[in-house]
Length: 205
Image (cartoon, rainbow, N blue to C red; front, side):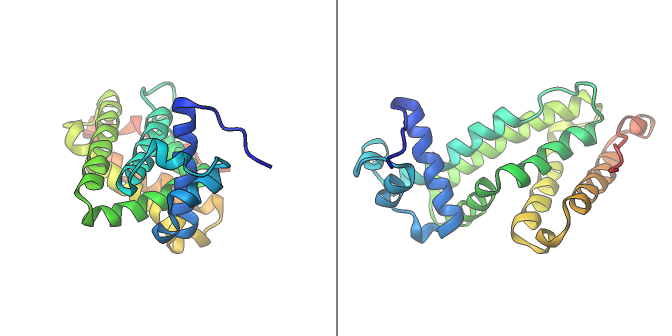
């Protein structure tokens, strides 16, 4: 049965989502325009119509993941402790968007050989780190823009280990505890001594 996929921007998103899934499940060798058409349930040639080259297809994957990241990124301190905000984001990604994470790591390695792809990944990374810096500034982290890089790197490392490393063997509860403990230690070190009480952490029951 052919999938019903909308036209226009929604169809482009559907193509990117199908491509991401293929990269995550088959690797870059399994990513072809024809395979994307089949995965998305589209007529042959649809992917080529929207994204003519392989480079354009890879870049579309990066841009689609960035769009979802931006939409899910916490933008204010709300009423939750900082650790809860950041931990819920990282844990949610590993639970609900595993394909995106696996594809991102595949594409990051491929970008070492493709300048256009590297530029798209770098641009997206800077945008996310700027959003993270704004959040860190709200909770009182000094020099938040510089601090956003190690915080993002730690979160990336924890997520990578969860989907592609030994962290995959942890129970959900153990992984959540590890994420919260790691973020608490990092944020505690970044905050001024007088502000450290604001970090807090919700214990896993």
